[in-house]
Amino acid sequence: MKILVTGGAGFIGSNFVHYACRERPDWHVTVFDALTYAGNTKNLEGLDESRYTFIKGDICSESDIEQAVADCDAVVHFAAESHVDNSLHGPWAFVNTNIVGTYRLLEAVRKHNKRLHHISTDEVYGDLEPSDPKFSETTPYNPSSPYSATKAGSDHLVRAWVRSFDVQATLSNCSNNYGPYQHVEKFIPRQITEILGGRRPKLYGEGKNIRDWIHAEDHSSAILTILEKGKIGDTYMVGANGEKTNKEVLELVLELMGKAPEEYDSVPDRPGHDLRYAIDATKLHNELGWQPKYTDFRGGLQQTIDWYRNNEGWWQPQKAETEAKYKELGR
Ligand code: NAD
Ligand code: TDX
Image 1: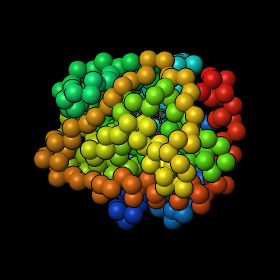
Image 2: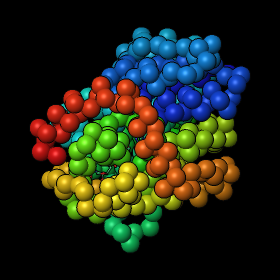
Image 3: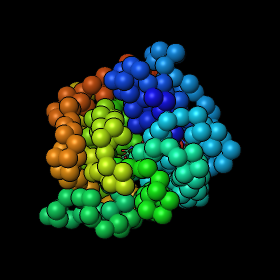
Image 4: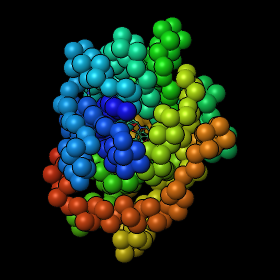
């Protein structure tokens, strides 16, 4: 089995590549990645070199992606612009990669008749009030940011290509991931690396927003399950019952790093900030028998903190530029 992983040098994509190489020793993985600011070939270090090939390529380039697709059996599509704050200040890259890039990939998959699994996010459903039921596969789309609107657009394209052209695709919409190799622009790594650098973490607004955290390895096991057992044309929600306010997460990071709970700064809120995301993964449990492994958030977070502590050489090169961008935004 030859698997093409778009965005495989990014956070979740590289976690998936490590997981798939471990769990499926007879597979060959081709990582296809443009190496934007978010991609890093260091994320693939430690893999047996005979097990994977790296192609530097852009999913928006018809020729780059078509060649790569022609040469594989199945595609797992992670490549995207993924950070909400960036989408508020430079939406074009999101429209281009998330929508045009997914279109190019779909055309290549259609032409060469390959299996596709498309990775998406719970953010396409908009946000919830604290008392609302969780998102499920039938929740109507209602995206808030340029990021989530372009991910929603990509989901609609995939569904249309399944229905209109018989493309053999499945989709999954997952909640917030955490774990190793996550860029320091994102909430948890930003706070860990601020503390490691001797500075105070930064909480948007009052920190009442709720996110539903899942470890990237559990997301990887869900993707592998759907790729192998999912029903063509179906969407699966992926989540691990990890709802927490941002303030709760930050206080836990502070505690695990030996700091007092008030040792952080409140900074101006993100415009249009979604209040709550929460996933109901019943379909994935009942139909495909998937279960998460990292059910203890405290343990998973401690492991993640240890990873950043032990891999300063990985994150330090991204840090100054990331914080300079946040400084410009006043966050
Ligand atoms: P990331 O930003 O860490 O990685 C994205 C990767 O895609 C990078 O390696 C980048 O170089 C590559 N890429 C970007 N544009 C490309 C292009 N035009 N051609 C080829 N490669 C390109 O993102 P992530 O957090 O790992 O997210 C991966 C996927 O999972 C995305 O589709 C995202 O929407 C989805 N997702 C993320 C989360 C989360 O919590 N991070 C949750 C649910 C879904
Ligand atoms: O410094 C910060 N302080 C803060 O309070 C940062 C960077 C974020 N936040 C808040 C904003 C969010 O409520 O923390 C929460 C999480 O923020 P992000 O890590 O930026 O994630 P989010 O906007 O929730 O989106 C993430 O989950 C869904 C991923 O980035 C998306 O790619 C995914 O689809």
